[in-house]
Amino acid sequence: MSRYLMAALLALIVASCGRSYTAPDNLDNACRLVQERPQYLSAMQATEQKWGVPIHVQMATIHQESSFIGDAKTPRRWFLGIIPRGRISTAYGYAQALDGTWDEYQQETGNRFARRTRIDDATDFMGWYMNHTERRNGIPKSDARRQYLAYHEGHAGYRRGSYNQKPWLLNVANRVDSRAERYRGQLATCSALR
Picture 1 (cartoon, one colour):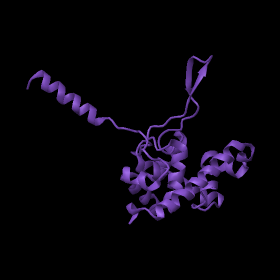
Picture 2 (picture 1 turned 90 degrees about the vertical axis):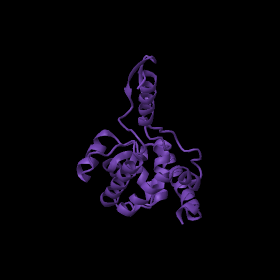
Picture 3 (picture 1 turned 30 degrees about the horizontal axis):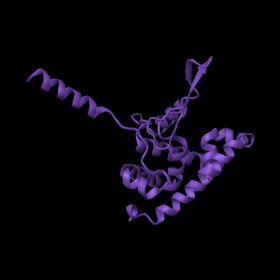
Picture 4 (picture 1 turned 120 degrees about the vertical axis):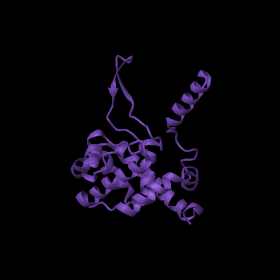
């Protein structure tokens, strides 16, 4: 085999290993979103079946956390505005799961090969977390606003009411709730679900 052919073959293999973590084209329309990325719908349906978290609640939370970008990271911190000092937190992936919480999820579920950059693992994590939220804090899985507050603040933070000191977070939670309702209405008429 010639060197050029071997190099081209190697380049093709390397390129096929890479993933595109870009957001879908239309984040405001649930039907178009799942038509463009049917694997998202499959993952969210499996999570709804397993954990009881409605698809529209999952979608609105993922939209807020990562805008459906699979390798989303928090912004960097800077020293003197020019020297990078690491990230604001360890939140990563579709669900913006923190390292410690992700480790707990993997250990508790036995899903040690789960990756935050895979939509099926991210939605399963979200279902697991929201299931705990319902058990620990009594928040129904269909309550997108309060589920989001507990997701953001953690179970203990939610119980302490830490979100009450964060008007910006209350506004974000209201937007998540609004988006969840909009997604719910759109999904009800979506041909992809029939």
